[in-house]
Length: 179
Image (cartoon, rainbow, N blue to C red; front, side, top):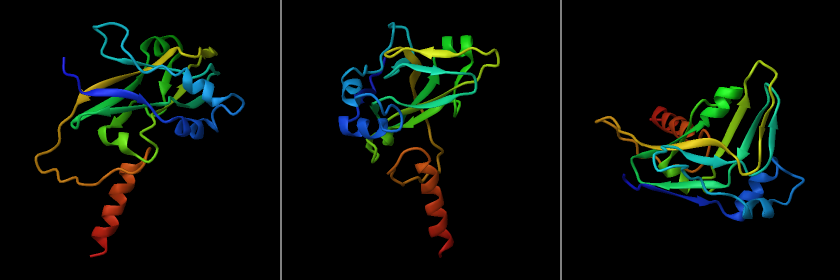
């Protein structure tokens, strides 16, 4: 098995900043100290479990964006794909709002320290509330290699989080139209 990545916590200051909208009434320093790095449950597991930093309860139709406090440094040519834990999807129809999260290798160097957020939704129609306890696995990340086309000439550099690569395309299109 190839070793291509490593998980780190974001800085405590970054975590505190990103927790402001999420969990205002609790001391984020305490939450930060108790964060658990993603890990595999067994040697045969493909997915690295991501753990909730706090207790979460979602009624049907509710969603929440969770600041995990994690970042992933990985070799070029690899991507971290985030999925809900299959048991939560099966029991509650818990889903990621964007269906599958994609964490690119250059995201680690973003202004937000590559802080991985995971937005989940309770999409069940049976009236079931989803309860996720603090330090309970709720999502899983799988590292996968990827390829590029033979004529690929991408040379942009990331400097942001969600949607930043789309902004790079828009900037290049504007520059190309200016000539």
